[in-house]
Amino acid sequence: MVKTKTIPIFPLDLVLFPNQELPLKIFEPRYKQMIDDCILSNKEFGVCLSSSEMTVSNWEAPYGVGTIAKIIDCKDVDTTSGHLHINTKGHNRFRIIRIIPPCLKQPNYYDPFSIEGVQKIDELHQDVGTHEKMYIQAVVELINDIEESISLREWNYLIELWKKKISLLADPQNISSYELDTLLDRYYLKTEIPTLDYVYSLCALGASSPKDLQLILESSTKEQLLKRCEKLLKTD
Image (cartoon, rainbow, N blue to C red; front, side):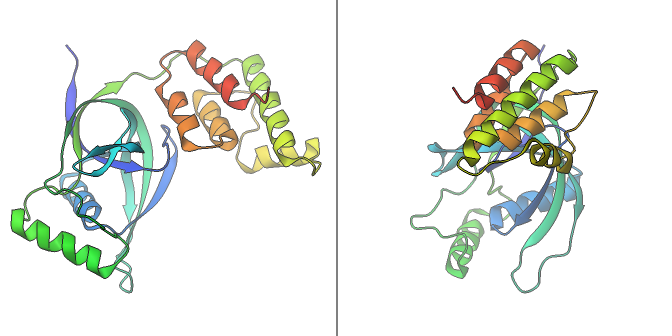
């Protein structure tokens, strides 16, 4: 029987991979409520790539596969802007089984960056009851990690594809092999013992858009992962 649990969902314009750190600045009332709830109950939340083509109660909907984020620390609220600063780290991947819509629909012409937008959401939340959840939740199942190891040959092949892609994108500027190796060093990607985390990081460094990375996150086998990485990094 599949084990499921209910977690808050944070749709973002990015893909979070397991073991990657993600600093966040929280300013919308619905996500301030979410972070408060997570801290009070020692609960995790799910980070998913957001879709502009799908909505939940007029809010951008999450893609179906995401990553559990655990809060590492939470800094004091910025008193001038009211923003909350948190650091998180990705853990298990998950698949959404069922979406639980928020208590509020997105108002027309809602601007989350404006005082008027924040006040409008606060007023609507007062009307439905402040105990109700303004953020999307979902029933999810955890996805098992890919346990097969990445060989040094497979890793070096991906590195060469990445170097070729970066060199082509830089044209007509010439990037030397030394400069490419320095860039790999900067992102801690020079290794003789590659792991899944290294592959995720290399793809993030070579992706053109977050949508490119969603397929990488959704890979269920090493073979599928490597084929998708190759497609992402190839230039022809």
